[in-house]
Image (cartoon, rainbow, N blue to C red; front, side):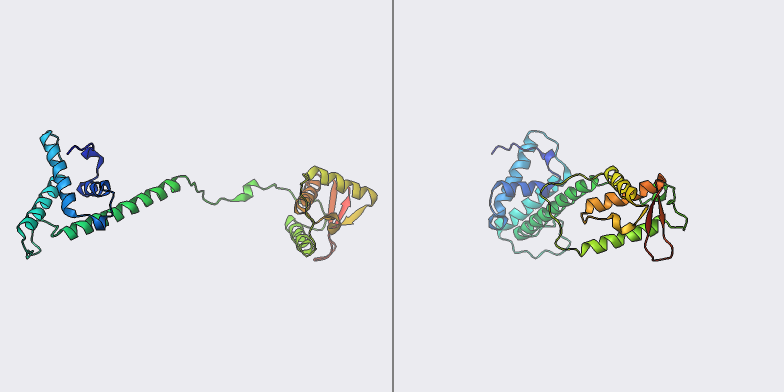
Length: 240
């Protein structure tokens, strides 16, 4: 019998036994273990005849299998105690060890795949985002902050969410912050001031966000002034 496999390709004797089982293309529960034992011993003998160095654990398994095979040939009833130097007492136990080894090998494969996926994930510790914030205040005289404006913006979003039916478009037109700044200037050219909520004349999300960013930029550029007489009252946008 000719073998075209190299002992270096196997992690140990159990790996070789599992390979011999799979080579039969039969379910392990249907295989006669005596055939696998013969294949293993023939393979080890072929390596020995070629003067190839064989790892000791492969030789230990070979001696164990020879011991197991000899007991079956002479029909010996197993009455050995736990001090037996051979740790496989029957063909059934050998089969169970191969099955167990296959399960561990499959688990190892899964862990290796998970480890490879994990190596493709990069994590970063949280950092203080204040370093990336613009350090400017709204142009107003009442002490309004960006937080107050953000609350007003949240109220706009809440009110518009109740409007039905919502407008649906097949094609989407890009809305820029610059276009909303021009529109706000046009509104304030007709009147000196307008209410904050008036500037959100459309309930499309991209228009609302662009409008809010336009208000922030115009306040930073001091082309508009934002006022609120009392807490919780309406916010007004003034032309400068």
